Image 1 (cartoon, rainbow, N blue to C red):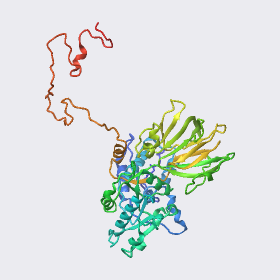
Image 2 (image 1 turned 180 degrees about the vertical axis):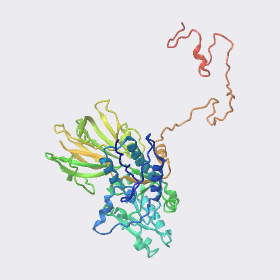
Image 3 (image 1 turned 30 degrees about the vertical axis):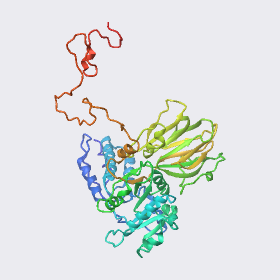
Image 4 (image 1 turned 180 degrees about the horizontal axis):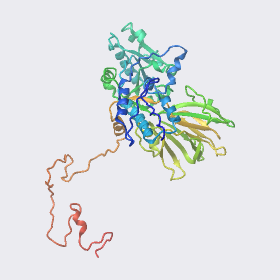
Amino acid sequence: MAAPSPPVPCLWTKPGTAQPQSSTPSNGAFDPHTARYLSKAISDLQLSPASPVPNSAAKLAALTSPCFFHRRFDDAVNIEKVLEEIHDDDQLSHSRLMQTAAGVREVGRQLQRRPIKRAVRNVMIVTKARDNTLITLTRELTEWLLSTPRYGRPTGVNVYVDAKLKQSKRFDMPSLLAQNQNYHSMLRFWTPELCWSSPDKFDLVITLGGDGTVLYTSWLFQRVVPPILSFSLGSLGFLTNFQFEQYKTHLDRIMGDSGMRINLRMRFTCTIYRSAASTLSSSTSTTSLMTEPANERVAVGMVEGEQHEVLNELVIDRGPSSYISSLDLYANESLLTRINADGLILSTPTGSTAYSLSAGGSLVHPDIPAILLTPICPHTLSFRPMLLNDSVMLKVKIPEKGRGSAFVSFDGKGRVELGRGDAVVVQASQYPFPTVLSQPLEWFDSISRTLRWNTRTAEQKDWSGDNEGDGTEEEGERPEFDIDFDDGGEDTAKDSGYSGASSSVEGWIPGKRKFA
């Protein structure tokens, strides 16, 4: 008799506590007790800032957790222990593997559905410092945030604005500080260095502008990202779904008892590797705010360059060269194909409405974890856009004997030249980009508003010829036509647009122009 298999790794057990006994049915069906354990763990999850962040040299300790929100989830889910037990369990059955996978998916769904109710005491405002209209709106929003009482205080919350606005006459900081002495300590200024070193200082980031402002915010936070609320003050606005005219209503709701729902948008971690024989240097490009140790599997015989967190897409093109680009595409260090095209786009689901869409790529919902691979004018017509699993690590390398170099850009920034033998590695980032949802079907509303998705300029007429018909005619009632129908003669064919019986005229052979 075989020994009983070990208990199922439990995703919702705190470290050091006993796991509940597995009650998986013999037929492999999902146990309802499992769902109850998971629901209880989710309901007990405290998303309020109960654990303080140290202010010592461990200022970067907050960056060790993959996500700003999942850090507070670590006490309820011991992911490392689960992965270790799965790896060490050689007798893991299919039913138990299915149960664990279903639990992981349920955790992800619950995190997306659960509103975050936490005190918003520090608000950061990102805007275009050179846009006079937006500076005026920034002043209005800042004054309202400072003066509106919150959380039992006579004043509002701390506000961080761009340090470039200190001397701005339109922002007029002296007159704002003169309204209340408390504003001297409440009005503060942010810099890119502050966003990198202390991202946990901000409970909420508000952007005033378009999609470019949101991408700039993603560039500011190269690791942990606070929740982002974007007001539509740009041209299109795929990512800006809040109207500034109603900012008081939106912020009162989010900063009140209702809380905010977050959409964790996928980002890419892109790392450049230089060949030892390459004469190009990363110093010729706009570098990112940070670098990390190299991936040992990729960096054999190569030198690591800069690293970027990408929200939209990574684009590799031929630059000013007149030759077609030759690129070697690897997946998990295995060569997939050699690409001959004008370039290549590796896009996130968020970036599926940007350059990738113009190059023939598909629209992808931001909740789908996928990597979009879209060629730019490929030499082979069978090389079509495709979706790849987000767990794959892609590497695009310039062949050692290629005709020329290539250029790579990250969200339209940091354009870098890649020489022969150089490579760029792309993989899903462990630091997503959290955006505040305006409504449950926000993405569909966005593409309908900006792309006019499946929208006709004029609706097709109904049978009665009335465009405003609501289709509520009683059953059996036929529309009236102002034409005559002659049904008496045998040689008279019926109106082909009125009845399907006209296709059965005697003597007519389908596909022929004449009668038999």
